[in-house]
Length: 250
Image (cartoon, one colour):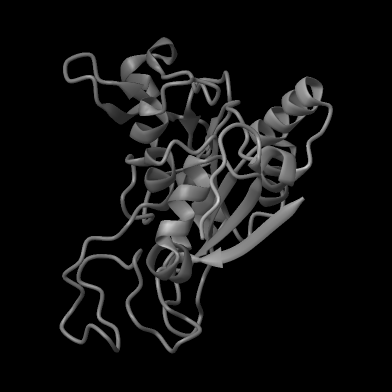
């Protein structure tokens, strides 16, 4: 069981190439991406998830770069397990970790984490207990997507445009709500849910966006070696390298 603890800076900037290909290949690692929207350890520079216009030591006039959405990025890379949670949610966070541990293949969990020194309050809309009850859109497989203190709001697909939108259930009826399908092979619906809130200062989806089964990197090679063993009686590397045509280079 291999777990990678990373952040919005190293995972999405320096290590971005490694991240997308680990997810694309479905390498069996569990990636905890702690997102505080800032380079906290190196004294507060703008990070790949910092909001547009963010004033930092490296962007004194405000960031002109649009931020990455880690969940959208992971889904675009065809990740087989993608989730989001909040560092202070003592029930939700462990549930996401257990689900990732049970997943066969790569798993990415974006964890909203406050940086009290350089970016304090960035996720107050979800970290504050009262605000969380209002704004956290908890995704549960097979359940209509509703949220709010009394579950008075929800998410539906607009009948005219096809886009997802946040609605008051009293206005549209409970039957109009979108039913979440985390096991759907096509990631487009999960991607649309990830775009509901580009900045987490209001209603924001948390939970498992996608959880599907794909071939796991490394397991295919193991199967090939087993097949070779059955055919040749050996799986020694030397035997594999010298199977078929060989050349001697002077």
